[in-house]
Length: 311
Ligand code: VAH
Image (cartoon, rainbow, N blue to C red):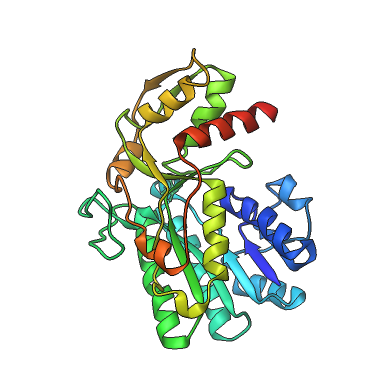
């Protein structure tokens, strides 16, 4: 059975729905630190699990006979800069607990998300390679870089089957993101429909790697379904779909909502975005486990505006 830790979050919630669709409701246990997403809490089996408490996770693993954990709880880049030690504690303690549960053979498989935040200002910005210089300048990025090192170490030393993807910015409509730098690309759709205008906290030409949630979920299912010996990267796979700037996403919205306007007021998150790549080379994922994206900016904008208009 599958346990999702951080199931109330932006990606965790959609993984919960998708995994229940694939494996059946009773085989997927959703969990989080509190009941802060009632759609998830009321859609199937839900447990309160503190990702920083080993016993809390182990009790849930034994109660429900869990063999696979998706660890989706983390503090993201913007919030992590406000609370550095909390970000370090949450992001690292939770990973060690799940890796150690696998080392002790309580569970047999782990998914752990990394991020393009592992890359820093000295990383090549265009078509960033799978193997390259990585000097992350955010706490969140540091936790993801060192988390990747530990994942690879536990695979090499203890044969732990942990798999990971360096997610780009992810855009979705079902659950709001929390505390990310790429969140502007979600907020803009909500504000376009509600106010007809959006004030972007990133400057107009800030190009970032992005992906629609459906593609991110597909990639996560694909990497977890892959044969173990097809996984050639045990740190974390680069993954990409598209790159765009606030100006370009605004243009795509204007082609649907002609009166939409955007203004720019960069804040502290501009420095975070400026430290990240503009585009990513994800050829290893495409080769090893047949990754392919479906959504480009035009299609994503249509889907986001259609779905949000219904809500
Ligand atoms: C963030 N959405 O903005 C996350 C993600 C690449 C960005 O890691 O922090």
